[in-house]
Image (cartoon, rainbow, N blue to C red; front, side):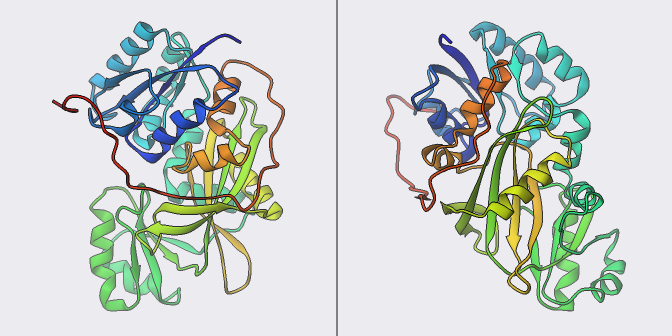
Length: 337
């Protein structure tokens, strides 16, 4: 294979930034086209070969700008790393148009809708008889007291559609329920009332091929999150958890997935069982740790998108850790101006 032009979106976030780092590892000769909404995105100044500022996915100009960039740069593979972009790109008419411009490994519109909505994710896992926390939909504040009586405090109130712990509240007493519901409902969509599962959080990083087979998987444990109650990983380690690795793959398959996805699962300290929190429909933020442990999820995604046969990768180095370092990138000129 000659040089491959890979377009990575969301390079100002950890997932996109670390995707670039992974693609620059030996084994894949990649020219990186970096995209982000912010001209000061770190990925523009570290590892990318060319960069473009694009409108947000909610803008009517997003698809037009993306298409023009793909054509201009002769992009071979597109790897989006932003939930909102994936929601747009997986629409059937868009997938059809994209397939005329470049290669990609993206789920169907139906599968993406299941992963992007936490209620639907839980329903699909439940239908597949996979373990999930007790979860109720709360349509209004007036329903809260009645439905919360079915769970023990503390409870979790969250929006059905969000990322990075946005709108999520951990409620310890009835008097806090109303405020938590309003916080979650402010993001739109349904509000979920869920049992609180005490225990550590694990990420199961996976890539599924076009026919649903698992091409790669790895288990990592979050050892520090922001906020501490649950959110973005800023430290973590690779762990050997064969049962969880199998379970994570089953969570992804039950959605009919294609491409990268990462179930987030908690170990319930009360009974030692695993329970699904959500399935992120993309590469996870600290994917470079997986790469250094021997499972280069971005490179595997690119190779599968190009039609290569890839031998499944399920073994990796255990006990390898990362910590997120807030160091400055020094660049010429004035980024963003």
